[in-house]
Amino acid sequence: MLAIVAVAAAQAQATTAVRLKWSGPIALHGLHGQRISALACPSSSQCTVVDQNHQVTFNPSTGAESAPVKLFPARSEASISGVACPALTRCTAVRWGQEVAFDPRSTAVMKPATVDRDADENFGGVACPSTTLCVGGDGGGSEVAFDPATGRLVRPAASVADIPLDATACPTLDRCTSIDSGADIVTFDPRSGRALSESEVDPAMESHSEEEGSDSSPAALACPSADLCVTVDPLGNAVSFNPLSRGAGTVVSIDRGHWLTSVACPSTTECVAVDSRGRAFRGDPANGKWLPETVPGAKTLIAVACATSRECVAIDPASGSWHRRYGVFGRL
Image: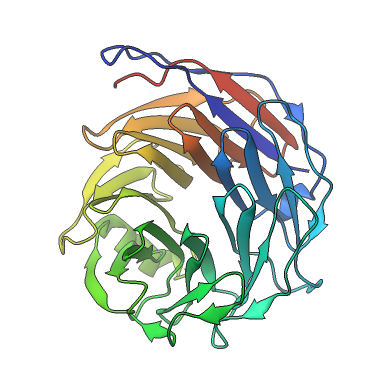
């Protein structure tokens, strides 16, 4: 079972800042919560979550959910590491160098295809800027670009960095940014594989990663535009940066000493982050202001997705419920 936290916000006057409120927990029964690994929401009425081998699609407005659909053969040592849904009828999930495309509104699942033979359990997430292009990275610093319908590579895998690529975001067809757990980032053109920029955006995470080990924390990344990305870290910092800049980003402590697990940015002035204590934070990366919000009944939030600036969803694999919040995003 898992907990999903849905954020619904109504339009506000630009000068108004309103703290949004959350509902109590509502159960979602389709998956084994402790193995939930990723979330994607292509619209305010459709979200897809994945666990070790399956997907469940649900409507956060009504609570209606599909039966679990198997995506990959059972494999005890592997879990789905990412899912992306560029359209209502097309999602792609990745696991250990394999990808599979599926229609979340049906039981239709294509045959899994191997797209990165060198990837191990560190094959990090997937980003799909279109229905015909998806991008993923591996623990060796290589990235692959492929057609999810066929599994055919757009070009050979390209080594773009000496860092493990833990998370990837692609705001445009010709621009992707990947990050590792030490907040080293590389920006590249997914079609050619050419690296455009590489930098360290969160210096505090560099020393933390060295002290705790390279696998100390998964990286979280959102890029609402080609010149703005936001990452959050286990130290409680939110970091905004230009992915083509070679300097450090702007670091803001929003949850000091606590692990921020995920971030989503439906626009360049609106982001939502969640933490391991079941709290949410809404912020504006343009001015660095963030406000905390308690989510009733949430224990550990591991992922957040925002289909629009009025609707976000976060998942809690511990409490087995989902929450919806109403209100006005407003200007911070």
